[in-house]
Amino acid sequence: MGERPRFYLTTPIYYVNDRPHIGHLYTTTLADAIARLHRLRGEEVFLLTGTDEHAAKVVDAAAERGLSPQEWADRNAAAFRAAFAEFGIENDDFVRTSEERHKGFVRRAIASLVESGDVYLGDYEGWYDAGQEEYVPESRAKEHDYRSPITGRPLTKRCEKNYFFRLSGWSEALLQLLEESPRFVQPETRRNEVIGRIREGLADVPISRTGGGDWGVRFPGDEDHLIYVWIDALLSYASPLEAPDRQRFWPADLHLIGKEILWFHAVIWPALLMALQRTPGHEWLELPRAVYAHSFWVREGQKMSKSLGNFVELEQLRELVGRFGLEALRWYFATQGPLGAADADFAERRFAEVYNADLANTVGNAFSRISHMAERYLGGRFERPCEGGALRREAEALRSGGSADPLGLACAERGLALVRAIDGHIEATKPFRLAKQAGQEARVAEILYECAEAYRLASLELWPVLPAKMEEVWRRLGLAGYGAALGGRGAGRLAEWQRWGGLPAGSRLEPGPALFPRYEAPGMGRG
Image (cartoon, rainbow, N blue to C red; front, side, top):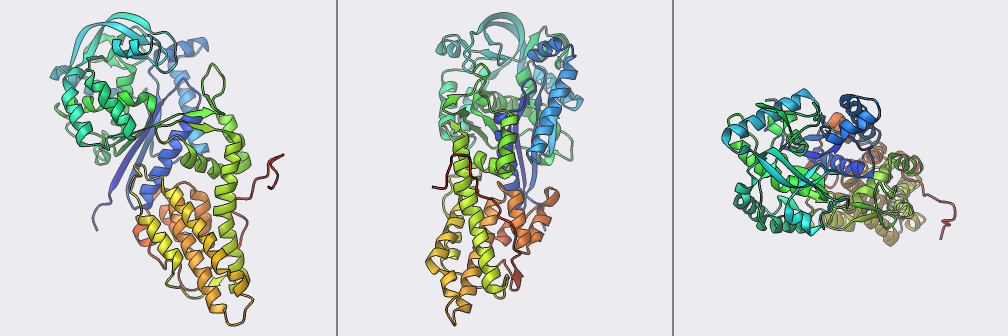
C-alpha cells in the first residue's frame, strides 16, 4: 500500500493585539471543516494556524498595561489557543512569530535573499498605513484619497532607509502563474483584481524598519533594522515545516485568508518563494497551490468596526452556542458565510431561522422519523439490505454533480439535499400507512432501509461541518467504526464508505433524543 496523499492548509496567523472575534473563528472553523473533509478522504492532513506578534502596536499596547511585549503577546496568543479549542477546532500546530524556531528560519531566509541580490538597502519615501502596518504605493494611496483602504484613517508620509525586496522583477512570472494556474487565486473576481494591479506595475517593497526597540526579528547583518512584520508573518507558513520530517507536507495546498490581505498572499508571497527557491537550502519551497480569499461578515446590515463597537465577539458566539449548540454555529459559518465575492450578514434572527429550517426541521427531523418508524415497525432492526431505488439514484447524482467547489464545503449542501430527498421519499411512499396494511411488511422494511442507508450516505457529506452529531448518528446506526477511524485526527475511507449497502444486514438503529431540537424564541411562534 502506497503513501497516503497529503494535504496542507493554513489560516492567516492572527494579529495578537486583537481579541478573538467572529472573523478569526470563521476562517479557522472553515479550515477545520476542510481539514476534516480531507481526512475523511483518507489523506494525511496538516492544519496550521497561529499568531502574528511582531507589530509596533504590540509594544505600545504592552507598555500601556505595564507589560513587556512578550508578556502581552503570551497572554493574547493563549487567548487564541483557548478560543480555538473551545470552539472545536483541531489544528495540528500553532505557530507564534516570537518563537525561536520561526525567528531562526526568517533570519536564514532573509540572509539568503541578501546574498542572492534579491534584497538590497535603499531609501523609502512614500505612504504608510500605521493601523495595518503596511507600506502603500502612491497609486493605491491616491485611489483611496490617501486614507487606509481598510480603516479609512489618514495615511502618513514616511522617509526612511529600508531594505527592499525586488518585487518589480517578478511581474512577468507572477502574471504567468496567475494566467496558467487560474486556481492559484480564488474566487475568480479576486484573481482578476490581482492581475489588474500587477499590470499597473510593481514597485520594490520595503521589508525592514528601524526603531521599535527589540521587538521583532533582527535583520541579519544589520542590527539597526527589524524585519518588516508582514514578511515575518508570511514566512510563518514555512517555518514550522522546515524540519525534515515535516517538509513532506509542503507546499501548502491551500492558504485560506480574508480578502483584506490578498495582495500579500497572491503577489508578495509567491515572489518571495520564487526568489528563495534559487538560494541554497530553500529549494524545497515550492509555490502554494491555491490562495482563497473570502469576504467579510457584516452585522445586521452594517460593516463591523471597532469604532461602531459592533464586532461579534466571543461572548455573543458563546451565547449562541449555549442556545443552539456548537454545531449550529459551524453550520451557519459553512453555509451562510461570506465565502464568495460578497459580504454576508450575521443576524441573530437569521441564525435561528437557518437552524430550524436546515438542522431541526430537516437533518434532525428526518433521522427522528427514520428512527421512530424503524423502532415501531421493524423492532429497530434492518434484517436485510435492499438495492435501493430513487434515493440511491439521488445520492449518486448529488455526488457526481458539479465541480465548481474549490474548498469542498459544498458537501454540507449535498448532505442537506439528500436528507430533503429522504423526507420527500417518506412522503411519497408513506411507510407509516403501508405498515397498517397486511402483507406490506417487506415493502415497509425496504423503504426504511433505503431511507436509513441514504441517511448514512448523507452523514458522510455532513460530517466535516457537523462532526459530533454525525458521529452520534454513526453510533446509533451501529457504525461507530467510522468515528474510531477518524478519531485522533485519523483517516477515513470515504470511497469505500460511499458505496451503497454500507448499512449491513441485521443493523440495529438505536433510539435516542433529537439531534437538533427545534428552537422556539420568545415571540417566534410556531407559524
